[in-house]
Amino acid sequence: MVYLGDANFNSRIFKSAECNIVIASRESAVPGNNIKMSQHNKISVTVVTGFLGAGKTTFINRILKANPETQFALVENEFGDVSIDTQLIKGVDATRLFELKDGCICCTITNEYEGILKELAERFPHVEYLLIETTGIADPVSVIRPFFKDDELNALYNYNGCVCMVDALHFDNQPEKEILLKQLAVADEVLITKTEQLTDTPKKDFKKKIQEMNSLSAIHFAENRATEKFKLNSSVSEIKFHNPEPAGHSHAKINTKTFRFNQLLDKDEFMRRLAYNLDIHKSIVYRVKGILCFENEPYEFILQGVGGSFELNEGETLVTKPESVLVLIGNFEDLQLDLL
Ligand SMILES: Nc1nc2c(ncn2[C@@H]2O[C@H](COP(=O)(O)OP(=O)(O)OP(=O)(O)O)[C@@H](O)[C@H]2O)c(=O)[nH]1
Image (cartoon, rainbow, N blue to C red; front, side, top):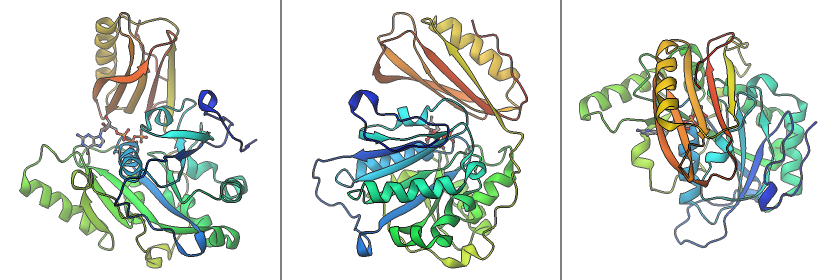
């Protein structure tokens, strides 16, 4: 069952098996916001897609930061039973939050999804902008189609387009390439991430390669978009929706595994074991993320990993309970890790 409701600061997350929607409300007035209300006060909507770890959440954080006076709603979909991304959305006073998790949005799209979108628009008329972050393995067509097919949704929302994040660092060795190609195919704008280490020539070559895959979309380097205000109200080319039928569920074999630890972890030992285990399984583990609590560390640590490499950074949340969670996503049936 999915339900909508107000939340206070301490219970910002309304969980159901189906849906996770954050309504982000930022009130400070910063001059220069370029987001305009669309005609008839429809809610503008942008779908943010891209393969696992490409930089979707990072991009959404940038948008929220760059447009502090806009009332955003955010639909976060995560594959797996633990929602880590919602905890990584920063600088947002989330006043209401709903959850769409434990399933890929393109596999769980039902009339219920459309119902949620309608209810959202009706109950929260102050919302100006809806961002939908798909899972990294979603075919975004299923997520976009309701905005074209359903007259009621069409009257409530102004679909602005689909942004696809592409990870330049891992592109050539990307597993499940067909998923990424589908995401690229429907993108109205492609943002290339992780190019800081590249010099001009490989950057240009990479952009050209992406252009050859989708010549209709605007292609930018995400780093150039880091601080500027993102133009979210782009117009969408209908040409991309000539064949909007989702082409099956090619990612059925992708699974998640969640590890929970109810004790403070020994940082060096845990990270050593994790590195060892991830190295062994690097061909089948595509993405790892976690929120970890270590002995003698007052703040939680955020673990992020893509394609065999990972990083650990101190977060901004104080440890209140000795509880850690680690989520792995990849092409495995089951996964046994020796972490403690
Ligand atoms: N160097 C670099 N790192 C980036 C960039 N964008 C994102 N990252 C890092 O890549 C990792 C994954 O970023 P996320 O924004 O969580 O990626 P995501 O697409 O939301 O991941 P999923 O939700 O798991 O699919 C994090 O460690 C980010 O800090 C970028 O442009 N450059």
